[in-house]
Length: 352
Image 1 (cartoon, rainbow, N blue to C red):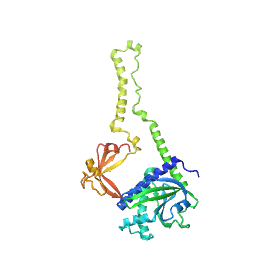
Image 2: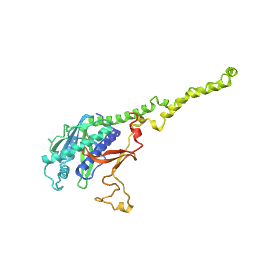
Image 3: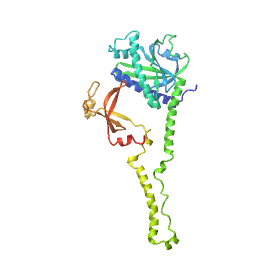
Image 4: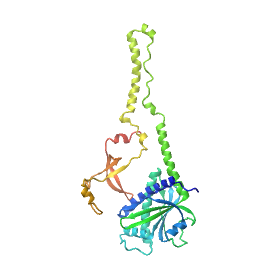
């Protein structure tokens, strides 16, 4: 199979960046520590090279898709990083690391990876524009320096795409996590992504070129007919004036209808439904001097102007559209909308 082009690799990297960004947010909530995952580095490699470069005990996380996509990929996490994550989850000391991971440790890291990959699948659903779901991740604890330690169903000489993520957890972990993608699955991901973008552009062009928009302001075809010179001599002046006025009166409803259809109360919101907006939940604000800002460090508390029982603002592209309350939904923070800010309501239910 032909290798992916640089443009295709960039698209695949962006997909991984978005998906793992969502996973990092979830892990941060689980651990109560700031988690940072850098932009991925993609390379072609083989399973033999992976084993050679990481001859250490590792936790393999096999992720298979059951809806929206077809394929499997593998994440590789060192046993020491996995043990530290599990210790934080179980309230144990970070320094007390076991020589090998037992069932309790594997169960803890399995729960963390399950939630992380679930968030990743949700992010991919938004990116691909359809539901994407995964099976519960399957964990394997293997020592890659042993030649008989298999990595999923990959052949030793099989060429795969390796995605390397540098990630940190507070000051506790600074390491590298690998993702291995079969080349055919990676190609399918890129084709789906780039195909979806092209389809969206084509759909937008079709909407712009769709017939029917010209009818909003129809040309006035029924203008006053020219005056027949022979009629001027036989028709009385009053009747001639009536003949000139009546056609203009017939066009009045057309003008009124056009004005109604182009008024602010009748905006064709359907034409804009595919436009993407950024939704922001604002917990609060404060003002401080530059000196105060420069003195802020890890552990500092910044006091906001929002009280404990106040609703938070919801902004769409920086514009206030609603207010709500912070809630926990599916193990993630969300905002329960309690108020829609006017004048938004007059458009939101129109043209359904």
